[in-house]
Length: 201
Image (cartoon, rainbow, N blue to C red; front, side):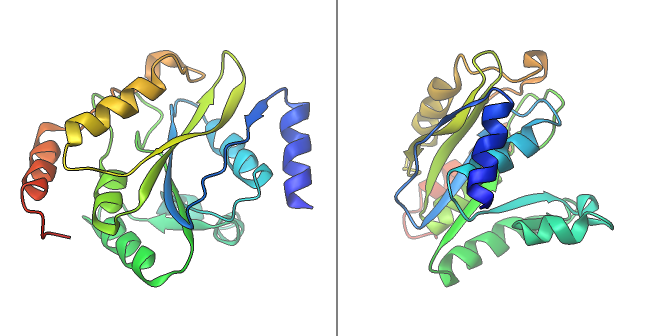
């Protein structure tokens, strides 16, 4: 019922859904660009229309009454951004203990323009050894859905080249607010150090 309603809602809103469903039982779906309040409800509709049971992360302040209970019922996981690495550790443990987990993350983290993406999704995928699926929302064409997948390799620069190549030409509702697809130098150095130690989880 929910899947049918979601498909109908997208159709009535004039959106075309790219029906590419990943085969993996455990995967991270990143969503970009993120420049508008509309991105969140449209993403929920798209994933529901694809019949995917997923979890998503959001600022803990979103989960206050009266909508907090509803958000948790539809897969929401509150995250306090002031607690360092809490999300990463919890997510890696969840991937290790669950038979199936589809986790969605918006790596920009905010609708405002930034000079980098947050690397949490990549840290999680690398440690849990799960693929990253490129979710997208393109306002000019009114297309949204899921693109190809990427398993993090021993070459983070090459991985991010693939990510940038996919999102090139995909535009958010407010393109001027799109963040640069790269990591902060400090975070990039940390990941590169991990890659130089093959036995590190």
